[in-house]
Length: 154
Image (tube, rainbow, N blue to C red; front, side):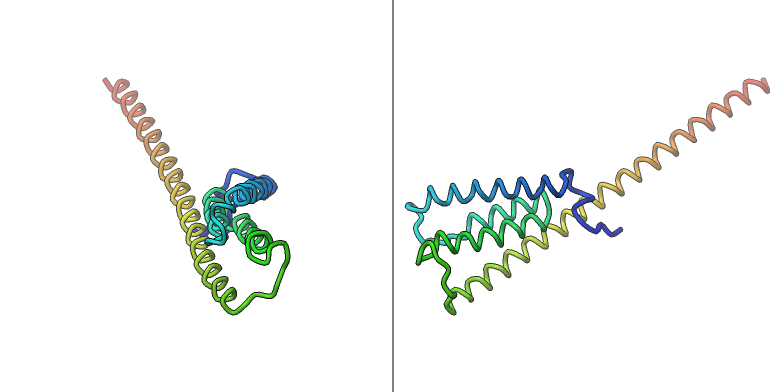
């Protein structure tokens, strides 16, 4: 059984998914801004990464990539020196981004695959339950007919 996308397993529409992801992104920016004096430059992308994982669990890989990529760009603008401007990345920045993106994308893809398998298993369980109920109904119907026939013969 192939589950193509989150339209099948997520109970939210695409518009709701991206709206909630955008709200979460603004909330994260606020939290990161409040915590920035205490955290400083210590791993500024961590909160964006965790939020993308949370979004992937609830809404799928599309909105989670949106949160992750937007959070990375906005985080780079506000929380990486020089603050408030875009500068070309250094070699160290590029290496950090490759590791960050690689690990994050791998986690998001794994979450998506697990969600699809979970949904496929739920569908198979519903089909199996439906077949079981149908068999019980047929068996009960057969027993009732047999009882009526045996009562007629007696």
